[in-house]
Length: 253
Image 1 (cartoon, rainbow, N blue to C red):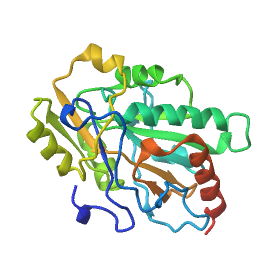
Image 2 (cartoon, rainbow, N blue to C red; image 1 turned 180 degrees about the vertical axis):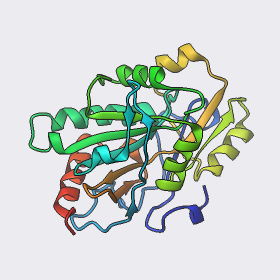
Image 3 (spheres, rainbow, N blue to C red; image 1 turned 30 degrees about the horizontal axis):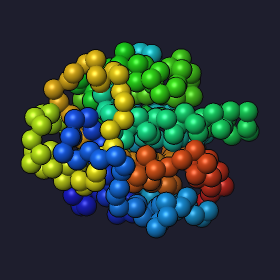
């Protein structure tokens, strides 16, 4: 995605996907996002309003229940974007978020925070695959604290790309390094990607990839985006916990 499609406060993010063999290495490297700073530091305590998070109705969660954006009124949302067949950044992000939720449990913040993920493969996967993905990385799909949302391709495009300014695209998994590099550049970068085990992907053998930006956002209780992490897989549970506390402290500003 070109910089002109981004909100001006948000730096270009990395991509994540399944099957980009030419771009895979043992560890991920990339450009540190503006909010992370040179050492992936948590967002500063005084947080500006970046943009208004999109509103939506009738999306479907991992259990087939209908979810609207007003469900999250009054709560902090940790928002991310996942491809169920991904074997690069998405499993790492999911694992970190499970650790974050375990850290929240038993604290006063537990009832004030929800994780909201959007399925960037609405045409090829749905609640069954979303449940399986969550289970693989340690999450109970029945938990109400994680809403993994999908819908029609048009609905998800409107929310993810038009609303959150996060680009994604479906590409053929041809194995061509030139084709994969071009697809990587088309959505904002070509950072190397690590391979992470994903039994769901291994069993499905899908012949396509969803390339998308490796982004995580914090939305405050009023529905405003207050922090953007352009390397979501690099955000550990302690850093995320500190960011959520900062957002709660700045929510009234």
